Length: 365
Image (tube, rainbow, N blue to C red; front, top):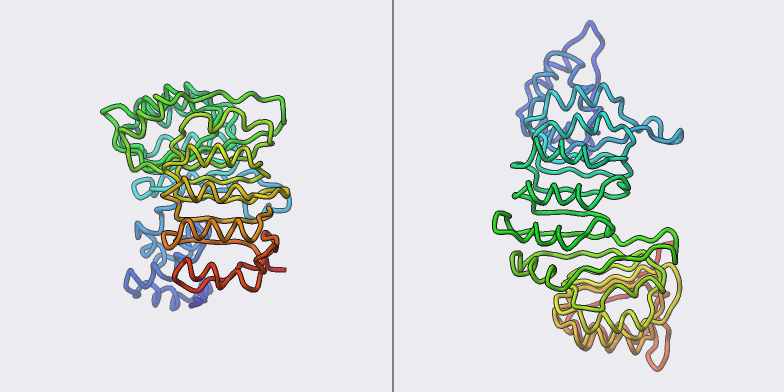
């Protein structure tokens, strides 16, 4: 459904009047298609429109892009407009997403009550986190951070110590620590529902990844038995040495670069809580260790393969081991290498194991 809004001339207030007569749910349906900044501007068109815009659901989600590149200039949000929006609608604010280098606007957000904050590529530091904690220790439920090099383990530990209602946390591996997991496992905390960890290497061979002790993971799982531990790996082969040596309670595992049989073999022995495994590898290696994962990871229900290689037989054996418990199976056609199974016949065999019709995904041109 498409909506077209007609802005009236200064001497005619008829379209605005008609819009002001719409029921709130109809106005919400119209204006929710506008970007946040356009909503703020439209609310100043006339008195009638301004009366419509206090609907709280229009101001739940705040997404700002600041200091953008020249190519995306028109997508940027002026800092003064951000300040006006936040000051006026802070009571309704639930989710804030920043992708910027404008620290003062970020600080402005931190002093207003909210439930969710997402920050990308922003030079946030430990003092900023202290502002966030001091003003939102009772309301903060979700915190997602990526590419925040000035935040230390102590800074994120400050959040874990004081925000007892935190349910979702996403961060880079370098600020994950045993102390953080133990803090999230204390009796004062609600059960953590989602822990996302990005393991990224930009200088292969120059970064040594620290280890997280098994008792720290055990404490987290004991306190929050249903937590999703999601790990995104963007590593080179020689950098996996730290990982999967002890049981890591990962539930969702994603590979953004090629991974060897040896690494997959270690995963198959430690993936007792596996729910989803996705390999979107930047490189080609044969992933025939998939069958071992299917055999040992009895909770695996979702598999995705792209930009890697696996023999048709290994893939078919994986599906046979998992059977009907697989609820998601996404495999690009170019992943599978024909052997005694052909691409034409594999969909029949896989469909038999799944109990439903299944086809290979085809990478769009």
